[in-house]
Length: 364
Image (cartoon, rainbow, N blue to C red; front, side):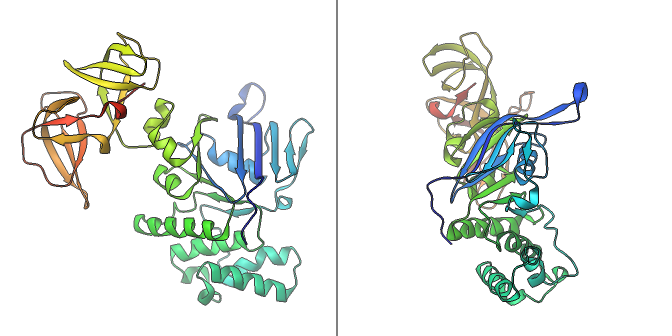
């Protein structure tokens, strides 16, 4: 089932989509362009209302754009200029919905076979295809059970099996793990990534969870207010964000009240409540400006003695997270939010130096 990796399975170009008409039209997608290569997993990530689910539904044929083009392989399925739109049922895409949408009165086998029966496939071929996909997803022994007899994770796998059974060029996943509890989500995330890699699938997945997007996808498209804010590999999105929105959405951050004292290229001298720190400019902040300055929580280093590029603050509290402690540093009389850092051990009360590497202290 491995696929050739030489061409795009999905191409979206300058897609616009509005809800409503005329003066009351509400633009949802504002010129989105993207592609999905064979064997690639792309995550559509963003906050509620950013347009990610609308984009997925437009690709599926469940929403009608106003402008742009959508192509699956070399086949155009939407062209606004020609007023052409191929119906959803003719696009041959696999869909996995957030709710799974399983037939409660049908067995696992019949739920998965449903799409093949609609395509008038022969009974023997249906039996072979369903048995093959159920085996691949570890569901072979559950073929005669009904949805209410399955766990949430098993129901999710049945929904995926139904989407994969006719070997579609692209599988569309709309928040596929959101109905699972936290522990099961982690297990399902690993299973889904392993399955996608093993079968060489091409997948477009909607999620609002940045950890989920980074774990499963090869590339992330971060949407913000109907446009693509930034796209790239999970590592590049996390480690080298181009905008403040990307930096804040992709990680857990401390935000520092700072003032720019001087700037030399990307090196920025900062005043933080009287202390001098060096940071790295990721925006156009100039001397005298009060920029937004952030650092990932995990990049703050805790020291009991004075160190370079650090500020000293009293410890307020430590919270046990299992594999580490999350420590909050804040002056009791301060209205500022304070600083968070991780420690392997619970810290004793007192003042500590919080070191912030210059290349990780980002100034926007």
